[in-house]
Image (cartoon, rainbow, N blue to C red; front, side):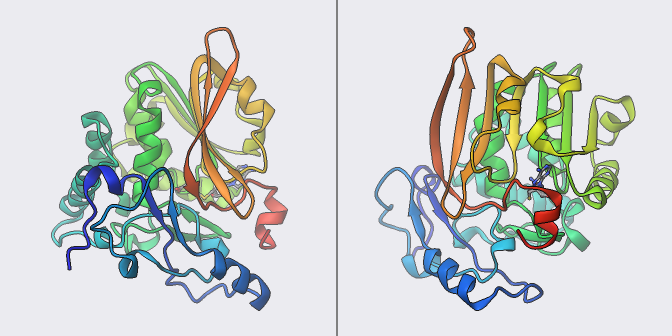
Length: 304
Ligand code: SAH
């Protein structure tokens, strides 16, 4: 059976993935309710006829693992070969599926090897969120691609980008590559150990020079307050779900700027917030998603 969705239709579909990590079990009551929500999210239209529900429907057992949120099972694994060639194959798959539509996003994702940002490099090219410890996850490749694509016009050379909940530093590195030269990319992450490891990851990547020249930086802080030092931002990405859009982030968005932020608790929407030149705000929902919460460090470390 052909389980490959057509590129345009597949991009509109989000599937939850199952976790392969047995390390953090859920209390039974939570497991039950979350399992019940593990479903295919038809975001904007009816399913493409070639999508197989048996391959797309899956369960997750662990809410700590569900960041990133979606995608097509049939592109979980990419071709064998060297790390960079497998990274390239992953990017090409995302292009075929219509998630990546611009050459610039493809080039940047090709230049930043995802394996450098995944613990031990294992499973780097599988289209699934993965645990990075501290009850956090690295988002699935298609979610990174989708956010880069949504923010592309606001990630031009010379622009300022803020990545809240920067985790592994993968997207911060991509932002840095998009806005160079003369631009500035800032990651804010509230787990200091993740800040340190993300800096090590970036140092091994094609974005290393940006760290050296100071156009890319990662800071340990509560990202709900943004990072005023380099504000206003043309692009803000939030990698964790907020109950509501933090006012400080709206304030730090430049007129003409765009923020992409998951909003909600159990059920979340990826919101796109545009600040017009007169300072007014428009918000639209891009798709349904599932991210870990944007919360306090204490709440995160005790499991929310
Ligand atoms: N986008 C990143 C990480 C996503 S997981 C990646 O793909 O690698 C969400 C991240 O948000 C986690 O690393 C978590 O520690 C962080 N986070 C949650 N609440 C936060 C807050 N209030 N301030 C800063 N970071 C936060």
